[in-house]
Length: 84
Image (tube, rainbow, N blue to C red; front, side):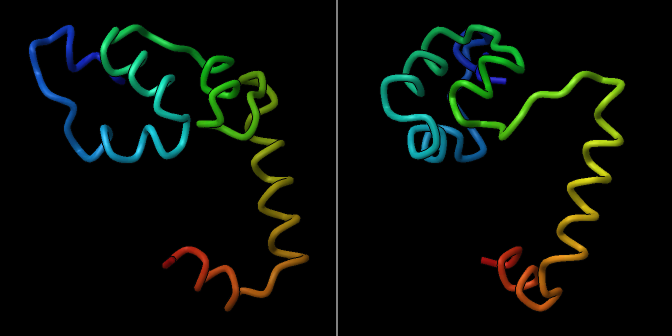
């Protein structure tokens, strides 16, 4: 959530540093200053998530994604990427 300002708090946990780098300065300022709620489609549009799937499709989609990685990616490469 970015509702820090609505609760009289400062943006914590590094969100004020990382959010502009992900969504751009203008969108980050909008989210942090307004404290508005945003939903899955908004997160996708901002680039915070790769895709949005229906609840019933979530597990099959996640398993297919994991299966693709397991079949096509070297475990050592994935381990290094996760640590970077």
